Length: 141
Image 1 (cartoon, rainbow, N blue to C red):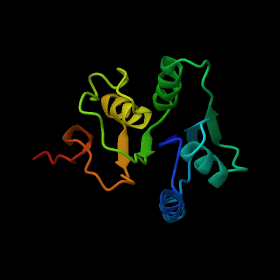
Image 2 (spheres, rainbow, N blue to C red):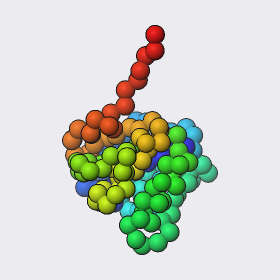
Image 3 (tube, rainbow, N blue to C red):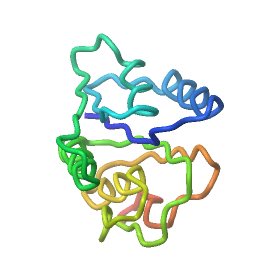
Image 4 (cartoon, helix red, strand yellow):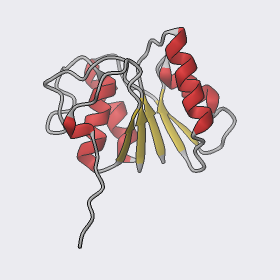
């Protein structure tokens, strides 16, 4: 499953960039996304009508419920495309992806990296992802 993550609030420019990226990079297999406003709603609308779209619902109102929802989605995914619109908090890493860092998108990215998923980071604010989020292909000789 191809999962998506991003902010709950998008500017009109960010919305246009995400729509362009979704149009240019169609997903053929199953798609998963959260149930929040912003990026989640935009992706759900983009893939509306597909029988292989799964919307992951948060099961509570505490911050940890949102992290739990993201973890459920990533546990069922093989790839993540994420659209952060702010820099990664310095304390957010794959070792501690959801430790109250204030960015669910970066926490989801860190968790996906920890789980070994292919991760595509499309930074809407133009910032460079931390080194742990930059995946490199290794060649074995």
